[in-house]
Image 1 (tube, one colour):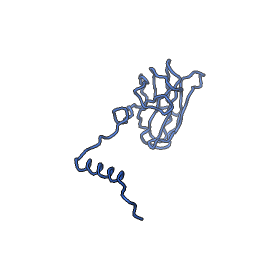
Image 2: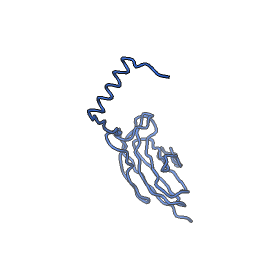
Image 3: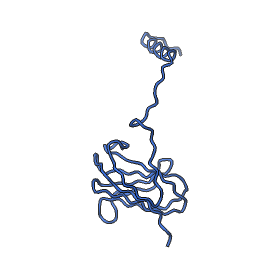
Length: 150
């Protein structure tokens, strides 16, 4: 079926063709003015950092900060996230973005997070730090520890 070329469609095609002819280049879109790159962290390392409104928007009104860590099959890790300023949530994500494990409140009854996980596949993982609630930000400490078998 052939559709008639309306004056409106002709204008759109002319504008697009003109932009291509002029060599107009559209810049790549970058979230928050920078490319997404998780902050590297190693096992048996503690990081003191700050969650801020400049971090990754969660889509739920809050923000998240991501850390990249390399883990091996068979590793047993403890991920400890503490803050005096907000109710923490820690998430361990696989390379494809699937949630491996998540913890909101630790076993001590506080609003800090303590996550234990056994790694079944070697590779790069993301540890996501975020706050429970919409606008909480502030300093935090993140520790990643490889547990030793007994």
